[in-house]
Image (cartoon, rainbow, N blue to C red; front, side, top):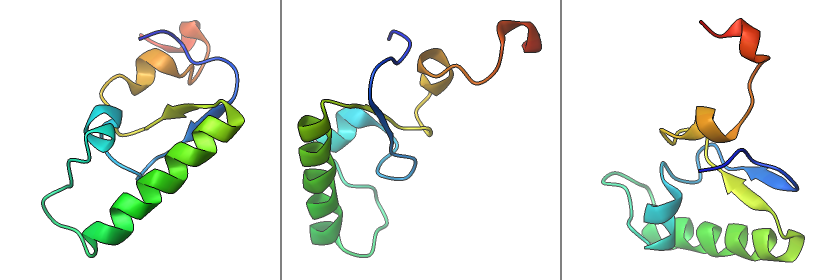
Length: 75
């Protein structure tokens, strides 16, 4: 995965994985499956309209796509 550039949307809690969200794989515990899927549809429409990339901060690859600090700050 390459470093994000251009318009981005930070979807911290929209899901833990973009692939699972796109596949409509629901988490094990949730309040309303219908509301969650509806929110995913709304997020996807927004991303398409803005031509933005979705970045989910809970994903394992988050640090690979988002620059959090100058390289010198990392050990």
